Length: 154
Ligand SMILES: [Zn+2]
Image 1: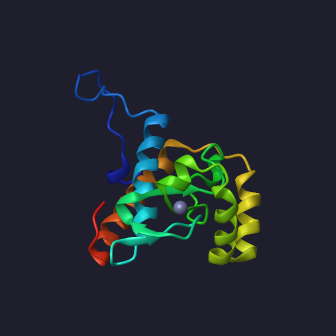
Image 2: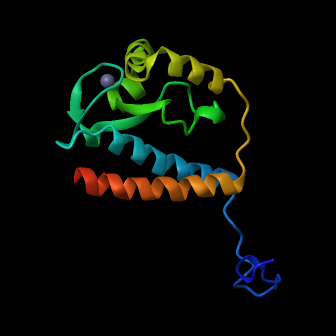
């Protein structure tokens, strides 16, 4: 085993017995950074965005990361095709926003990817700690890149 992946022996000192975050904590951290990524991705350089459901143009500060298939579907919870900038009015208060969302999502990603997404949403997925940790790192880096590229902060 190469020296750099050799594990240190466990000790009982206070320093090393710190608990690692639970899967639920990590999942919420990933929700946060992934949401930021989606909103930045869908932001125009002017700092505006078009709501995926109602089509209105609003300031990016008023955007949510709207999931087409709800977050209970773990397999598509962090799928970029499943998540788009959506205005708060649609995401939080409209019961039928999903009708406009569906129509605009098909326009945006095409029938083929839409069908694939539907299939993926209904597959079971149990995320492992390391997968979530990797995704947190990945999306943190992409958020930083997008902030610079678009000159927008959230
Ligand atoms: Zn809307």
